[in-house]
Length: 236
Image (tube, rainbow, N blue to C red; front, side, top):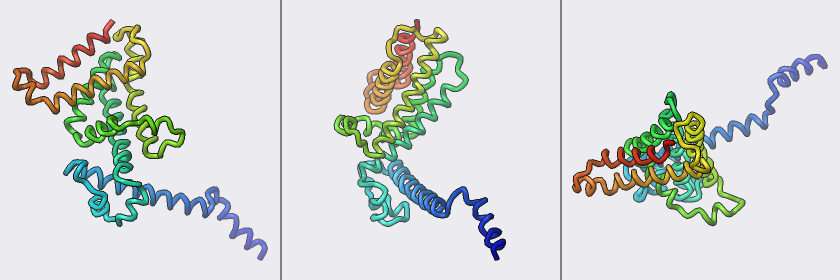
């Protein structure tokens, strides 16, 4: 009997680097992550179809096939859900930036490719661009000065930092290879400035495109000219 007990325990120990309690906890976390993703997927689809302002938490719950109460277990309110969408939108944007700059011969070429990828992103995924624009207009002073930043807010801040990091890397590469002048100052501040410029150009092209073309300037010409100005300011 003693040997049988050893025999029965040994297999459990050999596969038991993860205890039963840990395994159960991991399965529960996987289930929570899956349900959270389903909620964000539902909100993503509704946002693309109808826009943010008309979307309701009830609609999200129905699209996700979950109870309204369960949706509120994962997100405090619609604003909290918006942050989860922004995090997703920023991660998609970062990946597009990475793809756009891949294989370029200089840092300056990477910066232009990133800028044009941002324009394409705004046209192909307008609800993601809108989500980011709403987030960027959201006052952050109280939250950012608080040590206990809410989880979804912190996730958005981290995602935004990773997006800007791609520009910083390309700027630094350009300075190193000589395609970008070396007296621009802090590369992160420069990246923020480039983002602000590109974001403004995209918003004007979108909201005032009709008026710009009415005045005899094709919208694409306006965008190309804006990029030409940026490139000129970055070159040695």
